[in-house]
Image 1 (cartoon, rainbow, N blue to C red):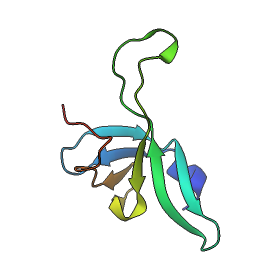
Image 2 (image 1 turned 180 degrees about the vertical axis):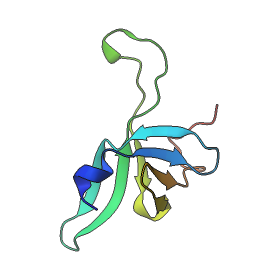
Image 3 (image 1 turned 60 degrees about the vertical axis):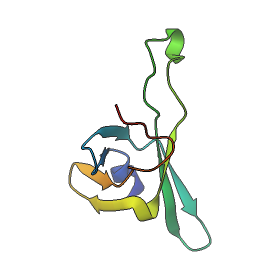
Length: 86
């Protein structure tokens, strides 16, 4: 699978079924040729003007990726500090 194909998939937390969004960026280890983690946009806090309502991006280590499917990537993001439960 190519990186361009990964960016089209939505990220879903397997612990609560919540959609975290698409991949914003990848953290790559260029020396080993491996993916270290993925970055997804933070959740909206409010309807702020000019996009000011977004929180910090969420970093998910690659070892938390459980399954890459046709439409989604399933991750275990339950105890990551940037992911808040509603």
